[in-house]
Length: 258
Image (cartoon, rainbow, N blue to C red; front, side, top):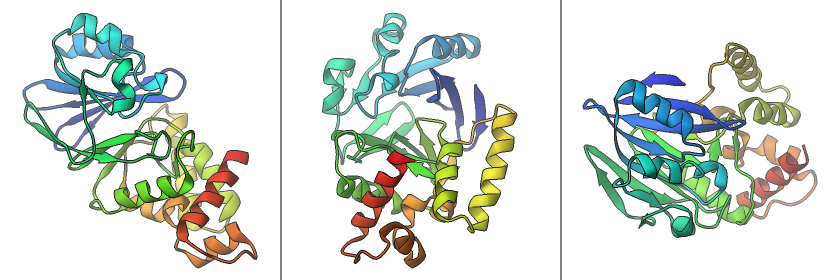
């Protein structure tokens, strides 16, 4: 568990192999749980901190993001579980979609549809926090298990419209593998090289690389840089550029094979 102090208390809880479960805590010790892939580490912190749970938020239907819901509901049977329609049979009790505004206690979340990793994937934005599940990671993005490259590209472009200080709270600690891939494409990029060294040190100290800021991701995340000519040359070779989503799709396929 790592506590990050911003406008509210944000806690990242390592779970399973490389997942993060997120807790967002207000000044009255009320909290919201995001994507509980397992229950036990969450319950341990709730009990230690004497936190009051207001809700659970789910971003998509994959088991490593919601397997802890049944056990948590045994302890907190009255709390709502928000999620997209694809989570209806996996624990969600209140279905939501893009454009919905959730007022939970003193916190207000906007719901953003970000299909690509799954077709119904959503993200929750409560400035400056963006809980984006498996859509955006530091230096990378999610695999296309159900959606298309064009869908994921458009989803990332939605996220790119948010303020620079947005804190990207992704669902996995994939930063080092993402940076290794980025350097295989842009080996001479000094910011990526320096960030790789920084994250290696963080991980050696068992510290998380998340959350990251959207401003920083604009600089080091090659999946957000598809408009750059040099990157297009490396990815497309001699192929003609027809759309930026084509660059993204080709880059995502390269990462899948990396």
